[in-house]
Image (cartoon, rainbow, N blue to C red; front, side, top):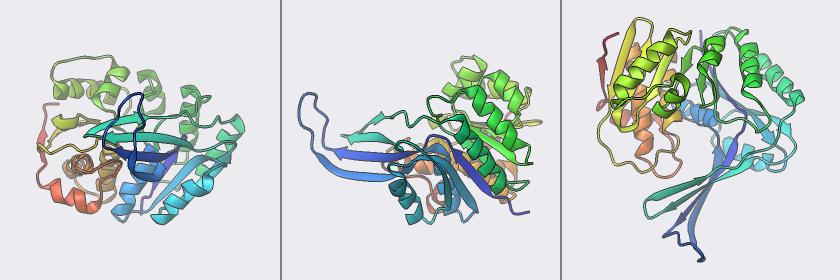
Length: 313
């Protein structure tokens, strides 16, 4: 079976990164350079997978006003995509880079009707095959509730696909309903789900991930920044220890990590190697400027520096 990665991005963006030599209030700050590209967590996962040569498809809800620009960026990368058009514009998210600092401004995006959600479900159902991995990642349009999103995911799950989730909106009870194949929270998102706190991020992640696995989530992959990653599934718990590197930008690191784990799974790697590749992709991403993501080449360059150790179950 050839598994594909189908990414669903409900609220995509055009990411605009502006580079200046400083940011001074009440003064005119000159932009030295500008970068524009299609963005969104699901799209980022597809982008990393595509760099590894995997089959992927981006499905997004896209505002008509600037849909041509948005789709054009994906076409430049030869990244397959299909869009559901809506009134309004794809939101432009701004990232300001100055003197080694980063300031992010994220807009809301267009509103989406129930008719559009129905059209998106129909599109996903037409495109997926049993065994595909469907990634639901990123924020929602303002007028779509988490309950609506749960129902959308459950409708897609009936097609025999594996569900991967990366966002900060679901409660523990909603994860019980969805019972996804994989979730990838960071430590802050994990605290929101399980309501835990601790002084040791790895121990805290391990304990909280065990609760999620006991509640129906098949695989839990927790990104911990400089503390690496913790992975928990039934009968196994692992920690990836990452090397000290110069962090140039954390944008897209979680998306890169999620993609890395899925890539390893599709390539039928042992779970330890899936976790190693996830950590390598996250590490490779933070070593790059701006919104640049991990690629096969950058992940391979650091993969051997990642140590994966077993944790007590």
